[in-house]
Image 1: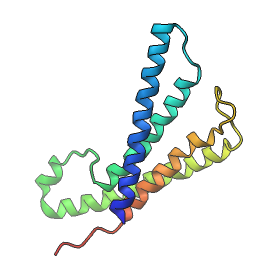
Image 2: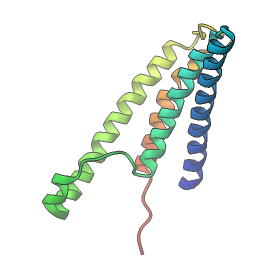
Image 3: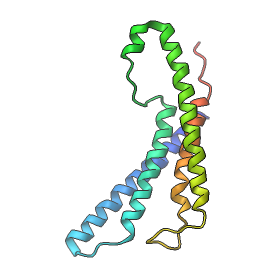
Length: 149
């Protein structure tokens, strides 16, 4: 189940990032070739990029792929490594919870706000990237690991 969810979140992050790149390329093309830039592409591109970052971060948590510096932990042996893993998990739980909580408050505060250039779209679509990404990160962090045989 974890791999299934991870796969679709990863695809969502990839699609958001690819759409961001396409929009920026389209904007550059229109600006320099036809001298007619669009006003909405920069804003939508920014929001797509933020979604790709938060979804990608959740996938990195699921794959245990976030960057770490392990030189001191490796010098301390298995006991220090175990303590470090526990402290790491506790710190991540607090950090993800903190960002998810205040991200939710920010999203709720902007419940009725609209995009500047696309007035028909609610801005909460952008602000929800923070609590959703952090909730997914928490979910993957706390998901029990498979027992090795």
